[in-house]
Image (cartoon, rainbow, N blue to C red):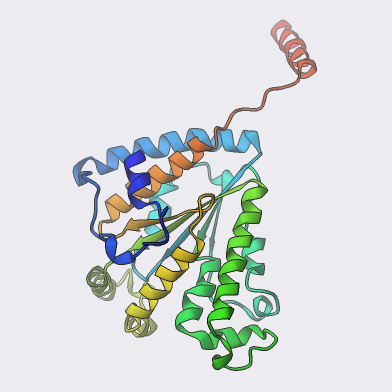
Length: 292
C-alpha cells in the first residue's frame, strides 16, 4: 500500500514533471488478480467510512481531474460502488452558469463540499479554473473581474494569485476538518485516441463524444503544461496531488482505492465513546428490554 502512495504522491514539486510518470505503469500488479484485490480494498474502505460517519469530525473530499476519456466516471463508479451511498455525494461540474459567473470562481465549489462525516467526490473541480481557463483565457472575461477587460490583462500575476487562492481555500478546509485527496488520471494521447474511436464505434457510448473533444485534443500540449503547473503550484503536504496512470483502467482503480483507504487510515478514526451517564442509561434500557 505504501508503495503506491510513495510512487504517485507528488511530494517534491520543485523537480516535478509529468514526463517522468508512465501512463501505462501498473506498479507490478497483475490484471488477473485486480478484481479480487479491488473487492477487498472496497470492503476495508467501507468499514472506515462507517467510522468516519460515526466520528463526525472530518469529511473527505476526493477530486478527480483528467483529460477526456481518462476514465473518471468509471473510476468513481468502481471504487465507490461498495460504499454506503448515504454517506457519499458526487458532483460533476460542467460549464459555469450565469449565476456562477455572478460570484467568485470558488463559490459553486464551496457549496458542493461534503459535510462532516461524509465523503464528497468532485468529478472535475475548482481546478478547471486554472486548467481550461489557462488554455482558453478568454473564458476568464466572463467572470467580470475588475481590471480584467481583455485577454492581455491576464498575465502571470493573475495566475499566481489564482493558485494562491486555491492553496488558501484548501488550507482553510484542511484546518476545519476536510481531508483532501486530489487525483490526476494521467492518460497518454495514444490511449485517448483508442478510447475515442471505441466511443464512436459503440452506439451506447456515442453520447459521450462530441466534435469539441477533437478540438481540445489538438491542444494536448497546452493542457499538459497547464496540469503540470497547477500540480506544482498546489500540491502540498496537507493537500497532495496523486498522478495516477490511466492507460490501464484496472490498475487505475486499484491505485485510487489504495490511496483512499490509506487516507482514511491516516485519519485514525474511532467510534465516539458515550459519557458515563449515557452508558448507564443504555444498561437501564437493556434491562427493560430483556424483561419484556
